[in-house]
Length: 257
Image 1 (cartoon, helix red, strand yellow):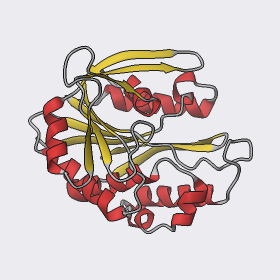
Image 2: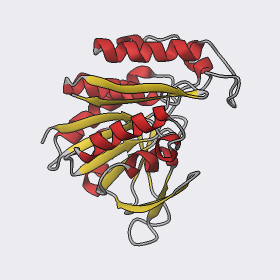
Image 3: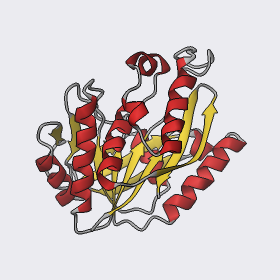
């Protein structure tokens, strides 16, 4: 098999609660993409799940469960682990992955909670088995890129069609109204990300000054380094479908061509 699709999706609850026109447009575009996805398995990389200091967590429980309260909805659903693919990934990247188990290896008690960075994107997709990957905010960018290349190879060699969801919100310092205050580097960070989509190369993001990342406060940067490796390995290009700022943080939607 070859890798089916790569998505970069936001996870702000606004794309489900729909408080404004921008959120409605982005939500509709994501819904269209998700409804036309033909994969058998979804790999989800979330910045709000398990975050380890040195490695990337790959969750290896039998089940997953979403219990995500939103303003106007409550997301509750279950998903199964695509265990063979999960364990293939762990074995293929022993230098950076950390296998995470919870309570027990199998059975009803082997159920790991889905964070909102996973449950909100998955809400839009037809239910299917998943692989859940955490985020590590390590400073070694090459290590993240190489993990992306490995993930791409493992997914591409799998017997089923696999799509990868890069769950990512952008800079969180667009406004003093937000919890992190204002920084002009929020806009600078997102301009670099948009430029990368336009050019088809994420080299500029790979080379971005760490101070811009630190003060712009995205949760996307580390997962986008992984995506950089996926795109290098697969040869795929990304199309930016929509981008806007929700009060203080940026949301972008993109998919591979």
